Image (cartoon, rainbow, N blue to C red; front, side, top):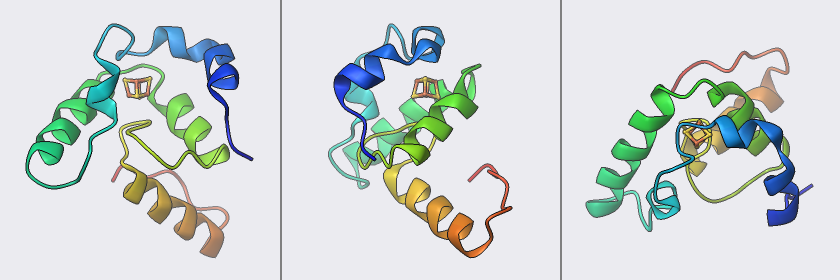
Length: 96
Ligand code: SF4
């Protein structure tokens, strides 16, 4: 299942995110190298102080959101979590 923007706008936890007043582009870096890496560091540092981080990550995992930083994780980190969960269904969501 993929989430549409309309679906995402309905997620009640989103209004409580620490990124609510941040530039959304910060959470969608163009690459993982150089400038993109700096964006990722800035975005994940905001996620570190977010009280809906777990909900955000779970939402991105359940909806298989491919792009952007969600729940403090990059798309590559989320893919790794999904692979780990498929190997070990009881795997917890360990931080990075
Ligand atoms: S975890 Fe990060 S991306 Fe998700 S709502 Fe919080 S600040 Fe925004």
